[in-house]
Image (tube, rainbow, N blue to C red; front, top):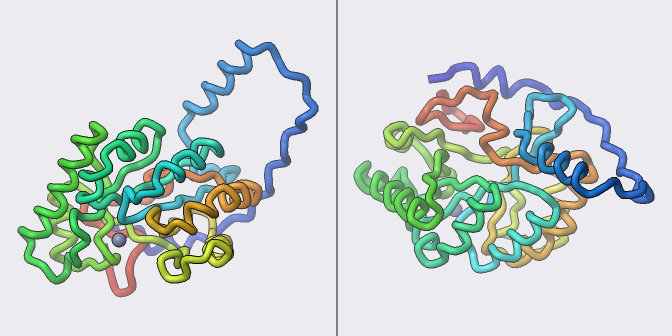
Length: 255
Ligand SMILES: [Zn+2]
């Protein structure tokens, strides 16, 4: 397993200048050439190691929640990507959202089937929670999650071993929006802007209505501060995580 993570975490954030807004008065180019160029730019993968790109990953847990459709509309409008750590029982009840998430280029992660604390149940029960969610996502969207976020961010050696069996690293977060606690749009925005940083992973919830409500303004603000909203896999690409590794490293934990 990788032991380079501690030193990688110490890399300081690099200041990046904001991209100036393109002048809107520029006359339109003939449609075909421009569309082709735009399509090509979109298809190009984000490189978070490029110091011109300031990546940030918004992650939404416990869903799909009932407001996921509105959230997906916002993400689409602002060309932002997100990662959804899905709870299998809701994947089963709201499969259309999951299918849409995959289709629109978002990342799907596994967040158990019924949100059990993995450190309090037997390994077979952990396996079952993960497997049932893998199966539900596969059925809904045709893809299988490659990342695991244990419920409550609670993990231990047993959780790591089971995650390794599924070939998945365990993804926590660099900071939370505290949306579940405040349930207040202004507070959620303020907190998220305060903790956003290069290569950060922010914990949010798409079942919190105030989070979904504030997303259009929050996404625009983050983008105006130079952030490119990306998938977790874009952020961790340079970390060389092995199955069963945790990132970011919890206190006292060594991969
Ligand atoms: Zn959760």
